[in-house]
View 1 (cartoon, helix red, strand yellow):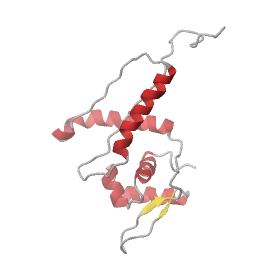
View 2 (cartoon, rainbow, N blue to C red):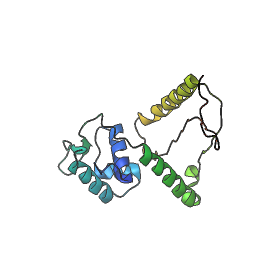
View 3 (tube, helix red, strand yellow):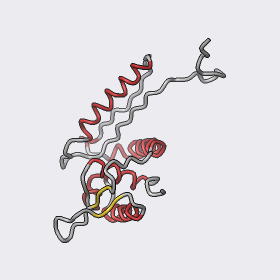
View 4 (tube, rainbow, N blue to C red):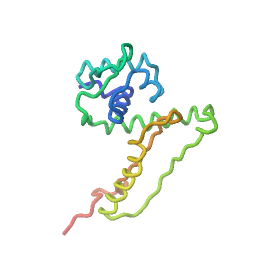
Length: 166
């Protein structure tokens, strides 16, 4: 199904996983796109069965919701591409940001962990991020990329990166 393989559609699906429903105007405000662009991509997602129109609270608003609330498309590769693209865009425009938003906190570290510790650190990071992903969004909030990658570092020039167990 092609629709999730698009940055705007992926962002819309992620937003709808956080909220019960959104209009294209609400999506545009939350994601920083135009309402027309959000409307177009919401219709495309509906065409492929990812979203449907929700009951409108007034005659004019056209809210959308996920067709299946547990919908979790596999967006791993796309998410990594968006992270890199979004970070490069941020670096190009960081100097234009208002002072209070000119903050970023990009860091990396090599740490030594056992397999159980690797899982524990990942769970702790997910727990911290979940607190912010599930709370109501304030009017002053903006989308912020939170990227964490935990993986074993493999030797660059070693034929078999994992020692064989004898």
